[in-house]
Image (cartoon, rainbow, N blue to C red):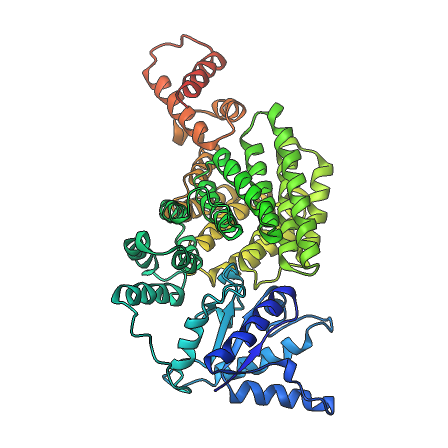
Amino acid sequence: MRVFISYAHDIEGRKVAEALAEALPRRGVEVIWDRDLPEGNPVSLPEWIVGSVTRHPVLCVLSPDYVHRFGAGDCTAARKGVLFESRVLQRRIYDHTDPGGCPVIPVADPGFSADLAPTLLKNLVISRFDAESEDGLDQIVRRLLALGLMPAPERPSTTSDAVDEKAALVDALEAASPSAAAGPDLVREWFGVAPDSSHAELLRALPAVERIVKASGSAELMRQVTRCCLRALPDGATAAEDRESRAWLLLRCQAWHQHRAHELAAAVSTVDEGLRLAKACGDGWLVAFGKRLLAILHCELAEDSRPDVRRHHFVQAVGCAEDASAMFHALDPAGGEYGACRNVLAGIWFTQYRLERRRSALKRANKLAGEAVGYLRPDRAREYHELLILRVRICIARGELSKARELVDKALMSLAGHVNDGASYAELLGSAHLARAALRLKESGRDALANAEKDISLALGFFDAISLPYASATCRWLLAKLAPETAGVDRADIRICERLFADPRMRLSGLEERSRRINEYVGGRWTRRAEWKEIARKLRSQD
């Protein structure tokens, strides 16, 4: 049997393609790739590509450059081979009408996010393959076997039913669409066999488990996954692979569920520990990822902090984002990871503008967001939409309301196509509706208030549905600001409460306490300001 490998010549693409080209022949699969290019007339190159793609099954190695060039490319001459191959592949997929498996198989490193895959390939099952350990090779071979083009190798007679069950369950996890309704149940079923699994078996399953849990948005389910996998690691492990596995779990899983639950201080501690381990085992990509995450956390801590502490968090956030940018730029100067860092940095400066009203911070945010546009394409769906929403907010602050309207409509229209793709897209839809609410209030007009309330209520529905209590509290606070009488207070109470508390959950508790006291009083005992000082003391003592 012959298999064609389609890949890009960036670092990740070459690494996975070379490992596949070395491993597959040992399983009886002959590999065709660009190392076999004809040495004659280069005019024959397109014919060679068309023939290879149309006559044989194809493994598409997903990497940043491959994703960027797939089907569309840009005006540069770089990676034209990927662009040509991808257009032939599109035709191969469109022409596939047999009831059997599709002969085009996307393959990616375990750390590659399925959200980044081109839409056409995202609809196919992505096989995971670790270039170092060759984990995932068996699944790729099984998928090729399912095409009916090669004889199945004999199974070892010593394979037990328990091992078969575990392997079948991991296969099901890897094959499941991340946003499938049955995904979380598969993960819970995996918990039943995970305690008896080896370290290697757990690590093989983890990338698929992570994708499914993040698509569901369940912080509690991710907490259980993290606890289960950390327990499976040897106590006091010193081997580099064990340190790297622990770092991966801390940065990609534990910090994720803590961040989602808005446990920011705990998440910072987790990331600090993950960074220490990643540095010890020399994983530059994971260090850069952790630095970017730390920048996001410090930015959110700045929003929740008193003015005298806020400066520290902003300095930390900017420093970490700049470090991550430099690291990712060194790994891949034209890559989307670098663009995601510029997006994070733009968000930090915009947050500083919002809290401190420094025009210089707004100017920096606008410049950085403009830089990120050149790196973040629609195929990096989450970061692409985050950037769109950030640009809407920057345009509103700059008074560019027509441009803000164009961008927010573009974001909402694009996100409508992802409405069934998991919790991360529901969260983005909520954020887009909040941005449109801010725009409507800025535009004013007769129906501005009612339309803004409608958008905030829609955002609240999205956040409630995916269990994001902090974001939901933000929406409820915004609704109370628009109509204080619905909370049983007046606008002066809103202004005082906003100055006293940064956390929207505390603000809502303050409004509730103030409303209760107003309803209970026959005659006023204290001034409004004294009353609020007493409420603040009470709430902070309970916190």
